Amino acid sequence: MKDDDIPKTEEGWRNKLTPEQYQILRKKGTEAPFTGEYVHTKDKGMYQCAACGNQLFSSDTKFDSGTGWPSFDQAIPGSVELRPDESDGMNRTEVVCAKCGSHLGHVFNDLPAGRQVGSKTGKRYCINSACLLLKK
Ligand SMILES: [Zn+2]
Image (cartoon, rainbow, N blue to C red; front, side, top):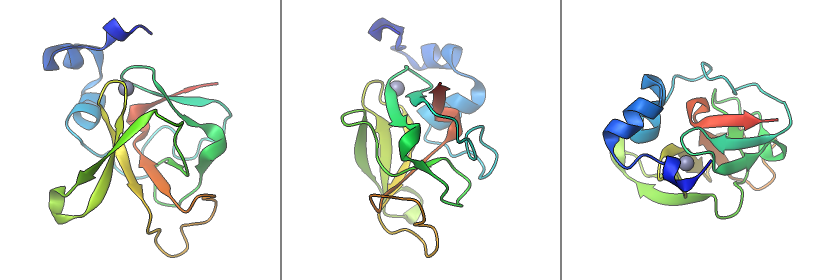
């Protein structure tokens, strides 16, 4: 995918994405837990940004967090940007695609009890399925 495939306007994004993807990627929405396409996926491959094709996560870093969202213990270096997010009265860290600036999810250091199983780094990138495209 070429860089000029990234829409320059909100109208362009609306035309490119499904309504659900637009709400999550461009409006920082969150899909309902356990509803996403990739929650339980164990297939090998590379997870790309659904908006621009940027390679974000290897399937090797995916683990079952039990939270209902695809979870990874690390991102491909340079593929994402982290931003402080104090919306909804919470102190979280937003994960954004470094290439197109779309919202992907949040990253957590403080894993809930019993949910750190499988994370090799102690981090949990909690990412919406709607923001991902698995290339096998
Ligand atoms: Zn992107």
